Amino acid sequence: MKKLKTYSIFFLLFIMVFSIAGCTSGQDPSGDADAGDGKITLTVTSSMTDEARVNIMNQTIKIFNQTHPNVRIRYNPSPWANYAQNLKLAFNSDSGQDIVYVDDTMQQMLQKNNYLMDITNDVKSRGWIDKQLSGAVDFQNARTPGRYYSIPFMTAPVTVFYNKDIFNKLNLTPPKTMDEFNTILEKVKAAGYVPMENGGLSNLPKMWSLFDILYNKVPMDDIKQFYFQKGITPAFEKGFVTALNQINDWSDKGYYRSDDASIDGAAVPQYYAKGQSVMVLAGNWDIPTYEGTKIPTGAFAFPPASANTPTHPTVNATDGGWALNAKLSDEKKQAALDFIDTFMNPDVVKLWYEGGSTPTVKADMLGAKASELKKEVDLSVQSTQMGFFLDNAVPGLGDILNKQLQLLYFHKATPEQAWTEIKSQYNKLVQASQGQ
Image (cartoon, rainbow, N blue to C red; front, side):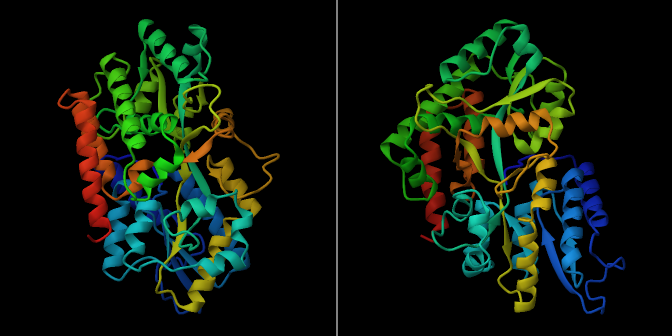
């Protein structure tokens, strides 16, 4: 669940009020969880607070209630910037929600404290693995091979969004290799455009670029060893330094906007909407945002090292998964599992697909409505393999990566020095995570 965006205080308050007041499908209007009407009440949370997905969630709840009129769903999301902390506080105070949407980092956090229910047998008995794209359920539960604690229903591909008008004006086509990508960066810079947006000090596009470059340089087995906290191979270390040098080179050449001092990246779509930005790495969750800029926008996968590369992993993991509170009663557990099963209903899959999501659930989308940008994003990742958001390797690593990328930008560290600090902090975080 990589919607790493922060908002103004006003906007946060607005969203929180909207989420609480607006997500009422299947709920008693009195707001009393114990209404005395014999219904089962399930509390559900996620970081999906935007109006579009709140509306889709409400429709999903209505479909669920058609077959489960005796279950009341209370959907109360919280913004991404606060989400992990809210989960932690809720479960630590013994008031964790019944159904929670978690990415890998959050799943680790809750699972190691025994807050999540092992639903392995239920996943198998309900046939959920076969209902999903090959490997999706295992990817979501990669740290517990053979044991399942959450079930995904969509992926989160990060692709390169680009201004089609500028590409056409400069006779450019989406690159197939890193050499072609670098040539494009040079040409658009020379033409007076901002080649890539980064979002000030948020550094998410840089971080995702770093991961994609690393995938071009390092075997996936070495990537997995790092991700699963098994250590750092020489190949991984070499590849990481190479990737940092590439990001540093792009920065030194002025390929990123130099006048954006924001800390949250919220201004990126606004800059892009002015028609001077050529490219930005963004997730599929941002499709409505870039469509809203009114700039003719296309999408392509971050390119591999060469056109003959046998595999092409990109930053594209399961977005998150539904997990259950370990303390649910049998009655609530069955109702909660039925609610999760609703997300594999073809009609529900279609709702989320048309809303901009990329489903992990198999369903015939023939006739489904989708924008051209949505189609381009999905098409661009069809021939790629799923790759981790590597900042999820261990809780806290994202902050370390961001800090070192900032130091690189301000020339306070070299790529080699940045890597030395990242490696040191990674090892410390792993030891802390493993209770050493």
